[in-house]
Image (cartoon, rainbow, N blue to C red; front, side, top):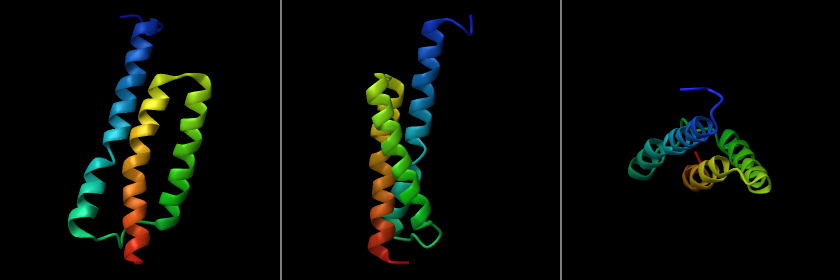
Length: 90
């Protein structure tokens, strides 16, 4: 396997997109189930969501599917977490 191979690079991007996108699912599920957001930083999730939106716009402009895919999925889960944080006011 050649690390410069286009197929390998694209697959690596997609695997990275899947891993980073799915990493927020356990946290979102836990918050939905427990309603406990005390240990979550509101400002951190505001900044994270802003960054994800910027990455999504960047990916769309560059037509980079792994970036578009990852950030489209990730924004859903991070917005859920932020929604519960703001709703719980803790």
